[in-house]
Length: 310
Image 1 (cartoon, rainbow, N blue to C red):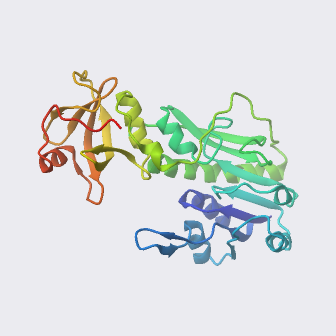
Image 2: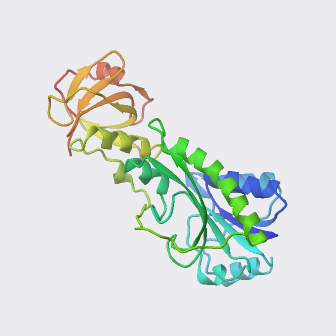
Image 3: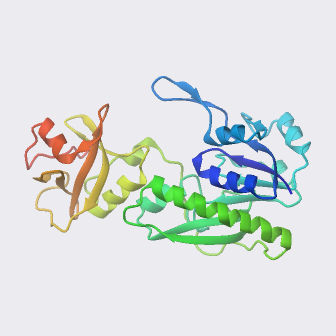
């Protein structure tokens, strides 16, 4: 079967690799344009482009999907199916109607929960215990199409966005191949989504700002879910600090939210709106990651001092 693959980040690579290793014919890969990254604004290509280049797959990087020449380009390839995994843009109706076998999307949640751009991050931040992947027949809505197959996994206490993303991307690659095989067999059909939808909007920088009035579990989840960007961050005497590794302790807070309760050998214990948060690794802006205790020593912190609340 002739397939056009749309995808951009690392999350999409296991699915593309699985298709390449299968009997399917990936005729081209569509990915986002190269973008400037880092302090040096060096032009970098998407991970999917690197993989496609290494495997000799033709690549398209349109600045927009509605251009007539782009549609003519992919139409001339006569795809049987379009597969979309974390591409980053909504496909217009003219593309959705192109392949006779439809446009199949792999989404990193159990739909209709966490429709949108950042389902993995928000599932962790909001304290979900389970999540998963869903294959879907795309329509013009935001992850509103009828679904084929689903697979679930537990969100572990030690999971961060990178670890959970890696697990879901591998799970998703297997589910995608199973979905395609069953579509060809005629043994699966898309069913309307059932249940109350929730949404996972694109992550903004301010989403990582810590509100110390929230509970220790909420801040713990924020720190896990906002890795690697924008990070869960706060300020101490105007210095921006990102929390890298935290945990909820059993100690009850005695001080006001944001106040350092104890400075231990390798960690700081900080009061929250409910409970105490242990900070074992943190990263001051422009510096290397360090232990909470090292941060305290370098700034001559004392118990009773506090992080800024605003």
